[in-house]
Image (cartoon, rainbow, N blue to C red; front, side, top):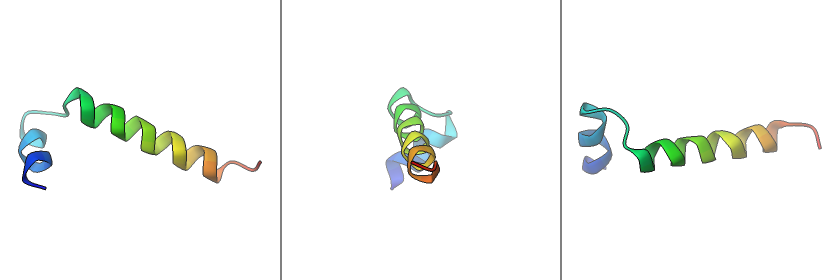
Length: 34
């Protein structure tokens, strides 16, 4: 993932931030007791 590594050099891009939030949301929902 050279694109991701290069973008980390200048900070997170909007797309990466949205993906990170989505992943965190999925983990929270899956970890929460339904």
